[in-house]
Image (cartoon, rainbow, N blue to C red):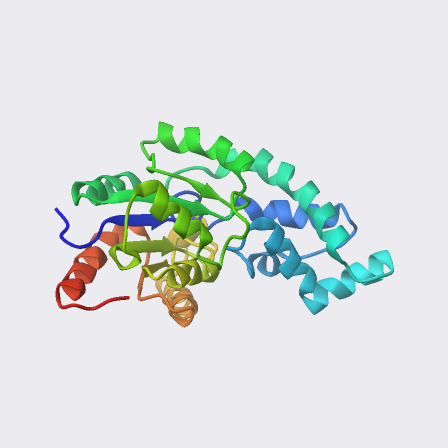
Length: 268
């Protein structure tokens, strides 16, 4: 049983479900297409981890995308256009998300091991609650049920602010923040944990930084895998992650290392 750590709080897409965090990508591309603007999947990925309206706002702020929008519509996008695109995006994402709810290998075993250490298992997500209402039963049917869920839109602000993490602390009854670990595959998710004062663990291979399905990753030559892994690790460490792992299947040794550090009096 753990001595110091009291909870692990996990992201969802790219961390626990949806290897490669692929569900939102087609929805972003299609939503823009319906407004006559082309964006690429790589462009759509850049702000991943933010609440989805904030994600769209970040895309609209990209000069290249804003320029294409202005060419099509005669003026740069503003708040009204962000809301209009968001209203198209959410139903699209809700429609396809069920196709991308397969647990990442090792998720159930990881959850069981976390609880065996006496820790709570929390969750935050950039998805809004209507989307998660489809995800939760599908994840539960595969054996994954966290102790709480905080969605984008539940609070006044989301990532990279610490507000969703604060709600997790209250929901789970855990404190101080230094007794909590945040696990996420995106830079805003790592920043969320840091802002809340927790330990942070970045997830590289299964997440947004690489963006490949499990099958695509397995088919990638080892040399290319090494390059992709190094790039993803650099992104997550650059955001401030204390540790980076390939996937949540590799989490337990990191929890051991954090315990060792805490026993020496170290804090995040």
